[in-house]
Amino acid sequence: MEGSIILTHRILNSGQTCPENTTICKGPSCVLPPDNFNATLNIVLSTVITIMLALVMFSMGCTVEVKKFWGHIRRPWGIAVGFLCQFGIMPLTAFVLSLAFNVHPVQAVVILIMGCCPGGTGSNILAYWVDGDMDLSISMTTCSTLLALGMMPLCLFLYTKTWVDSASIVIPYDSIGIALVTLVVPVGFGIFVNYKWPRQAKKILKVGSITGGILIVLIAVIGGVLYKGSWDIAPKLWILGTIFPAAGYIFGFLLAYISNQTWSRCRTVSLETGMQNTQLCTTIIQLSFTPEQLSMMFTFPLIYSIFQILFAVLLLLGYRLILYFSKNKTENNDEVTKPESLNGEANSGFQLDDKPSNGI
Image 1 (cartoon, rainbow, N blue to C red):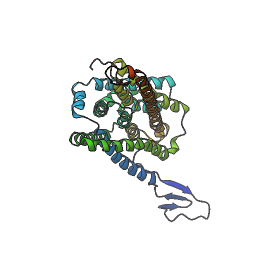
Image 2 (image 1 turned 135 degrees about the vertical axis):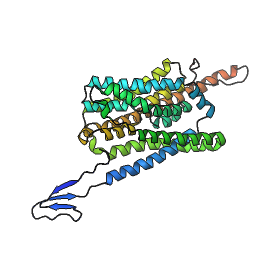
Image 3 (image 1 turned 30 degrees about the vertical axis):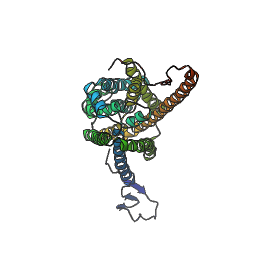
């Protein structure tokens, strides 16, 4: 459990004296003081990462235009699609995968908790790099985090009762509240800076986007190092940790496409669906389960985090390659057709966001 102290017992050979830092010494058995280094390091890193995430979200807010952002709130069609993906498709996918792979009950629960979590801030950073709709991305993350206060208990009640009593799962409302504050406040400042000083906002955005990319990788690496003792798990969880985020990206994109959203919105909804708040999932299982149960389930959020980042990077590379080859093709077509142009205007080129939209 979170905050628990584990005392280390050391049995000494005959004739061997207890170490100087021993707190209790009876015969051959010594009790050493607790080693809080890992816990302290975890707290320090969590604090630093939270501050860095707030700064990154401030820079992401510098991309948001007040009118467009308010437009998504007034006519929340894109948000509604994201809501259906986040709290409809993802929990259902988690439930189906858990049944299909016949995993251990506590492992099924952690998969379901992951599926019920709201989107993470990493989706906003990736949405920027794939030319997504940043106004929609940030509004979706904000709304999903806020709605998670009610939707997470409901989804967990519906799906987890197959394996455990849903009342035993502790929803950390304080953590959700902190996540909401660290998202809304920095973004609000970023929107204000973009409104008042648009030139400076562009410079802040460049620095923040690079920092955000580094931070995503850093969080994954730190998580793997801190909890390296938890990697000895069943192959089923590795397979599930690979399939689940990929399914989130695919289903999110398809649902946005079916609802006739623009290409940029399709990419945005896809990222918002597949990239879950893994830190929140980790907090929930730490608060809700015994150390013995944690040893069977704690690694899954780390696996999900790694593969959600890996697939997001592959999506980013694929998008950039399409953009690069499309640009070259357009330039070649311009060279061929330019002498025949009657008005001297160049072709506007291939647009990845030219999908017809029905206005929603």
